[in-house]
Image (tube, rainbow, N blue to C red; front, top):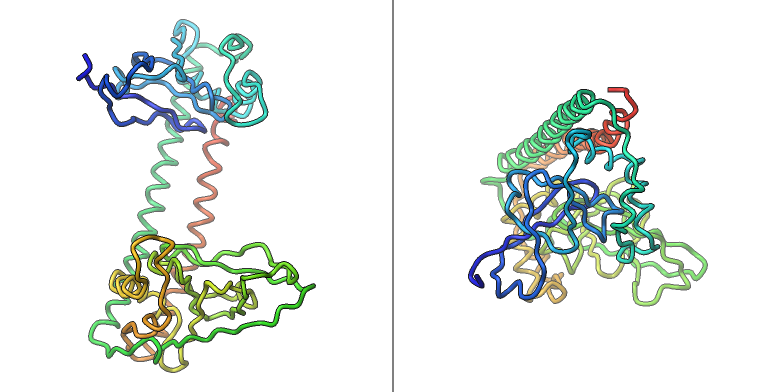
Length: 361
């Protein structure tokens, strides 16, 4: 028996379903109590039920195991459709009732009171109506899932478009070291005690800039802020190897980066910031950046400014780079529209549930 494998399940919060843990042998399980899960079981995670950790066991989960933290229930299908119950408890009204039987004020202390399950009241229309509501929710959820897939596919296509355009003008172009294309230009500031210094930082993986809370001058100790202007190539010297490079936009102009950021300013008529930054974020460019960031662990992989300045960069005709910049701007517009669409899609599932149980679907 000790050689038998036991695959346990877990439940995501916010009604996002079940996940499967790595199978373990009986020896690895030890004295931990496990309970068999069967298709159709309604389960809750007792420490995170208040956060929507609820699910119905599917055919794919049948025969797996849960610990004592995953009590199982069987829905009386003569009165309630299992997925009707699940969907109701995902609504704000249903979740509010779960929260009410999970006493405590902190996440890990808000343990579900099994004895109080009977306090949760579920509206029960006819079984026919319950099935209709579940079918309608499933239909709309499938459409939302498809729309998300199409949005992701479109984003991938846009990235491929830029990569193709970059290759088109970069292949065969002469190369120069970065110092001859976009040299370092750090703008140190004299810190005034009463002044606020709005900060800027860069996300890894080429995901752009973001804004941090301002530093107050009299609280500045080791940060040593540097002024950033629109059009700068902003580089994190500890995460450059991970793609923490970006072009500062108009919204970033006049903000300040810490001493951990390098600012490179392309030479007008030689290179554009977008083209150079895009190249540095290609696999070839990141390889060179990684080589200029010696070390084996994250915190020790500090970018050598001297080595960074020697990275070879293709320098196609300036007019071609300007064309690439204009293409980037159009892609940025589409991506901003995509981000609005993504936010709208994220708002749809809760809206669908609310309307379904309000009789509006």
